[in-house]
Length: 276
Ligand code: NAD
Image (tube, rainbow, N blue to C red; front, side):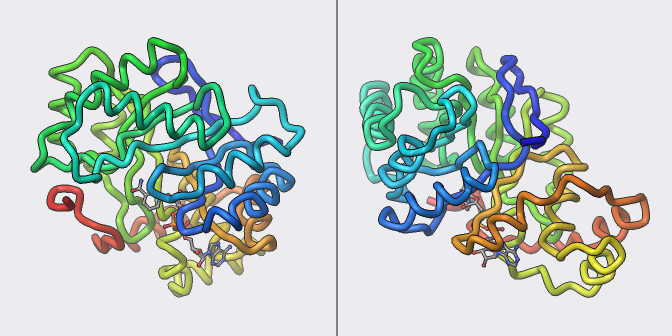
C-alpha cells in the first residue's frame, strides 16, 4: 500500500500510519475498520477500554487481507480498580485476544502509567512473559513520562518497543521524543490531529494551500517526516481516505519551521503524572 514502516527495537516492522478506533462503538467498529482496510490501512489501534475489540476483530476476520499483513495493537486497561498481579494481566490479555478473535496481537501496550499505584513494573514483567510466548510480537507502553520510562528500563529486561503518547502540533513532546531516540523506543502519536481542534490554524491553511492538500493531511505528513507513528481516527469514509492519502508530497524546511512554531504545550487529554 506504500505506507512506510518503522522497525521496532526487536526487529518487528510496524506501519507508520494506522487507524485508531477510540470512541467508535462496537456496533460501528466492524464497518469503520472494514472501510479503513479497503482504503489501504493495515494497522489498527484499539484497547480493552474502548469496548470495540469484538467489532474490530469481526472486520479483520471478514477481510481478505492475510493476518501477517495486518498490525493489530490493543492495550491493557490498568486503570481498573484492582490490584494487578501477573495472573490477572495474563487473564486480561487472553480476554482481549478472545474478543479480537486472534491468536496473537502485534503490539500490546500498558495503557497508562498510573504512577500512584506503582504497579507498572509488575505488569511489565507479565508483558515480558506474553512476549516470550509469542502471543504479542512486540510490547510497549502508553502515556509514560520520562521518569517512568527510565525506571522501567533500569529495573526490567525489556526496553518498550513503543511509547504511545499524546502528540500533535500543539504538544510536540520534544523531551520524550529525544529520550525515545536515546533508548530505542518508537514514538507513536495519539490524537495526532489534535482531535481536529487545531486544524483551523492559519499557518496550516497556508501550507495546505501551497501543497493543494488539506490541513489534516499537512499535520499527518509532518508526523511522518518527524518519524512518528500516527493513528488518526475518523468514522467518516471520506476522511478515512483523506488521512491515508499523505504520501505523494513532502513538506519543506519552511513548512516544518511554521509547524514547529505551533507548539504551545496544550494537552487535550489527561496528564499522565496525575491521571488515576
Ligand atoms: P485524532 O487527532 O485522530 O482526531 C480525530 C478527530 O479529528 C475526529 O473525530 C474528527 O473530529 C477529526 N478528523 C479526523 N480526520 C479529519 C480530517 N481529515 N479532516 C478534519 N477533521 C478530521 O484524535 P483521537 O481520536 O483522540 O486519537 C486517535 C487515536 O489515538 C484514537 O482513535 C486511539 O486509537 C488513540 N488514542 C490513544 C490514547 C491513549 O491513551 N493511548 C488516547 C486517545 C487516543
